[in-house]
Image (cartoon, rainbow over all chains, first blue to last red; front, side, top):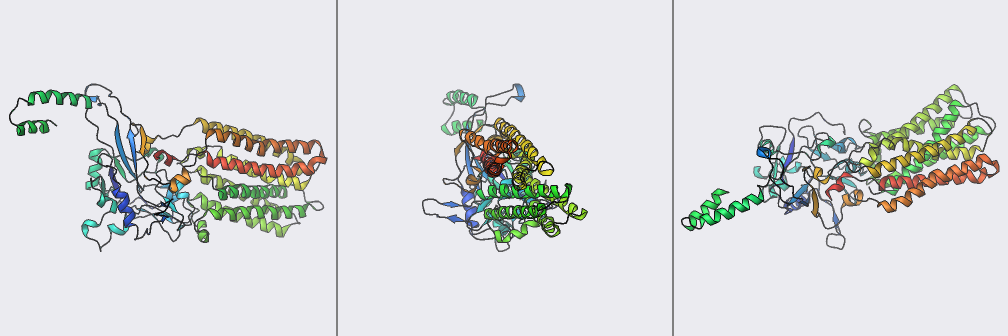
Length: 259
Length: 308
C-alpha cells in the first residue's frame, strides 16, 4: 500500500557522524556482504571480475574536499576560520517520514512499515518502473537489471529482529562494521534513546530538509576545527617555555593537557 | 535524465492517439449529425487513435523490469500519478469502444459518451504529465508549463490526422479545426521557448553543500564512491550539453511548429496542395514531438547528481 501509514512512535534509523567517518568503505562492503543473502539478496553483480563490472549497492561512500571558510564575526559570536578538509560521506536510504518513493509507486511494492518506519521494497510486487528512484533525491534506490526490480537499504530488518543472532549483532551490518564508530543505530522517535541524545548533543541535521521528505536518518556535521593559526602560535610559544621545564614526562604532560 | 526511448515513444504516440480521440469525441459531442460517410470516417479514426494509444502503451512496457506484473500498476491510484494514468488510459478505451458500437447513430446518449471520451483523454494526458511534474528531485520538470505543454502536444499531434482525414470542408467543424491547430502550433512554440528560457536561467535550487548536510560549505568531489558507473549515474547522470541542445531545440521547433504551420497555410491557401501538405504536417508534428520529448528528458537534471 503506497499510502503512508500514520506516523509511528518508533522511528528506527541511522545516525552518521561525518566527523569520524574516515571513508574506509567498511560499511559499504559489509552491507554488500550481508545482502548477498537475506531478504534483499542476492545483490546484483554483473561481470564482477571482467572489464565492465556493475552492481547494486545500498550504501555508497563519497569523498569531498570542503573549501576553507574565513573567520567571521567577533567577540563570542566569532566563528574561527575553518580550514579546508576532506569529508567522507556515506549515502544510503534515509527512511524518510514522508517519502515520495512510497507514494509514487504504482503497484504498492514500495511501502513504509507502520511499526518502525522502515521503508522497504516488496520484490514480489515491484514492476521495475524506476519511478521511485526518480522520486528520491538521495539516490537511495538502485535498479537491478538482472532481477528487474528496485533494491534499497532494508535497515537490516532481517538482522535487527533476528533471534538467531546474538543480542550484540542485532544491528545493521554497516553499524557493526564501522571501525571508527561513525555509524549509530536506534530509535530516533524516542527522545530518551542514546541515539537521540547524540543527535541533540552534536546538532544532527536532515539532508535537504527544504524538499519536505523529513528524513529519519541524521547526519552529524564535522565539529568546528579550532582556529588553526592561533593554535600554531601558541604551540610555538609553549614549546620554548617547556624546554626549560622539568623532565621529559612533565613536558609531554603539559603539551597534552594544554590541548 | 536518461531519455528512455520506450517512454518517449509511449508519451508521443499515445499522446497523439488520445489527442485524436479527444477531437473526434468533441466533434461527435458538439457538432451536427453526420452526413454521408462522415460517421464511417469517425469510426476509422477512433480505431486509428486506439491503435496509436495501444501501441504507445505497449511500448511503455519495454521500460519495465517485470512487465508481467504490470496489472498491479492499477492499484495505487490513490497516491500515484503513474497508477492514475494507467487507470485513466484504460478507462478512455471504454467510451471509445462504446462509440464504435453506437455510431453511426448520433443520439444525445452518443453525445454524452463522446463528451466522456474527451474528458478521459484529457485526464489521461494530464496524469502522464503529472508523473513528471510531481517529482521534486527534478526541478526542471516542476515548471507550470509542463502539463499545458503535454496537453498541447497531444492536441496538435492528434488534431492534424483528423484534419487530414476530414479533407478541407468549407464550413463546419473541420473548417474550424485548421485555424485552431495553427493557433495550437504557435502557442506550443511560444510555450516551449518560454520553458527552455526558464530552465536555462534557473540553477538547481540546492547546492552540493545542501545535499551533504553542510549548506554553508562549498564541497568539491574528491573521490567518487565507485570506479565504475552505476544505475544512478546511467539513469540520472545524463545531461545534454548546451551546445548540443541548441540544434536539437531548433529541429524540434521546426518539426512541430514551423513546418506544420507552413503546411497548414499551404493547405488553406490552395486546397489542391492539401493532399500532400497535411500528411507532411502529421508526420512532422509527431517527429517534432518526439525530439521535444527527448529534450525534455535530456535537459532535466536530477538532484542526486549533486552527490557526483
